[in-house]
Length: 114
Length: 116
Image (tube, rainbow over all chains, first blue to last red; front, side, top):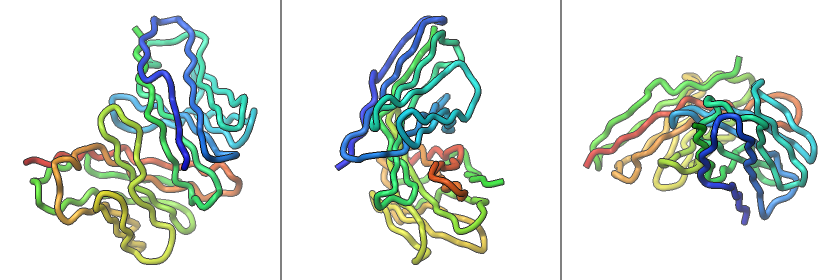
C-alpha cells in the first residue's frame, strides 16, 4: 500500500530564516506530487505541482520554491520566510495507476513564522 | 471557468439526524468529483468519488453522495450523523484539460458540527 510522509510535523521559525519541508511517498512510482497551503483552517491553495523528476510548476508567485530531486521526494523551500508564510502545508500525490485524479494527502506541517 | 462552490460555511445537525453538505460545480466535459474530510491538524482523507455510472456513490464511514447532472451538484449525505463526523469537508472536481497534471479545483470547505 502507498504511504506519504511529511516532516517536520510542526515548525516555528523567525522571519527571514530559511525553510525546508520534505515529503516522500512510498509504494508507488512516478506519482504526480503537489504542495498545498491551508491558512486559518479553511481553503486549500495549490502552490506547486510536479509530474516528474526536476519538473516543477508554480501556481502562485511568492518567495517559496519547490524541487523534486528523486521520483518520490518533493521539497518545499524558502530562502527568507515572511510572516504571511505561516500556515498548514500539505503534500499530496496521485498517479495514473487505477486512479481517476483523486489525491492522497500527507499529515501536514504546521509552520508558524514569528 | 471551472469552479466548485460549497455554499455553506457551517452546517449544524443533531446526532442521529441525517446530514447533507452541499456542493455545486462548473466544469467542461464530464466531471470527476470528489469528497474529502479533514479533522483538526490532520491531512485530508479521501471519502468518495464520482466518475461515471450510478448517480449515488457510497464511500467511507457511511457517507454517500448524489451526483445530479441537471443541477450540477454533488451533495454529501449520511443517514444518521455521529458526533465523530464533526470535521471540515471539502468538495473537489478534477480539471479537464489535455496533459497529465491532474489538478483538482477545491471548494472552500464546510465545517460540520454534530451536536450530541
